[in-house]
Length: 150
Length: 207
Image (cartoon, rainbow over the protein chains, first blue to last red):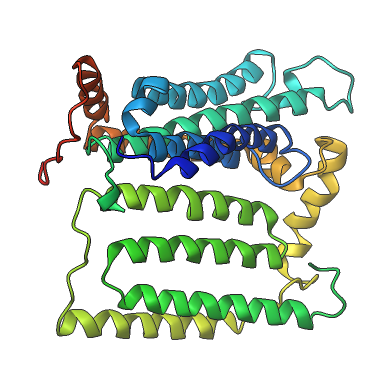
């Protein structure tokens, strides 16, 4: 943490990072109605974490979002996606057949909606976790990104 | 975009954006400073995303903007920190052969593109068989307005599962190859335990 010549950057980032994270969730939950979905949302959430670490230092970021948590999140997302597939299988449908998830009259779309939101959530976790883990793997090798490096 | 009267404006926009892409690609090929090349690749992705918007491929534009311009640039920067700041200049055959190869492949691609159907042609194979099928069936079967999401998440859910597996495997491989990044964490924890934070030490140049 050198002098305070980055003070504007820090203040602006502090305001922007929550908005970026919120926008990521908007992109995810609005993916059925507008462009976007779990993949883009995951990348946006990862970018919020990475932006924080670029400005406030990777050490602080790793204490908030630990590398183990990032890796676990990636694995959990992949498992969540697979679990939806097997849940549909257990409930009598085909693998990833979301109609089998909810018992509803023909023509109902609750099962499809729920299935899509959950698997997209799995995509979001897997992508966000993987991206942060990849960034940590690269950036974690230098203890601090100094000003001269830019 | 597509509401503009006549396609001339859209055509002009496309030509301008593609010309910008061409200029940036040439600049990236000639530059030697890795930092400038990384920044230009981010700009390249951003302009590509803009062009995707012009041709009404919004989902692809979104992905290109967030992945290409956002995270790839940051990852390139992080990777750049681990290597030297300038690329070595090529000499002799290493300079000429790639140029000839690129020109030859480009010529083949341009020749092949003559056979492609026109942009937005309603009679093209993509718009007559499976594409229309999805457009017709999404509303009664899935019940969501965004057909792209319906295809990605429901009709082709198994493919998307594979893609997520690829992303996960990529993250896992990079962390396994480069280490888990805990070195910085332990260093900062050690630094915080000291009474006074030391001057940031120079990281070792070589690993």
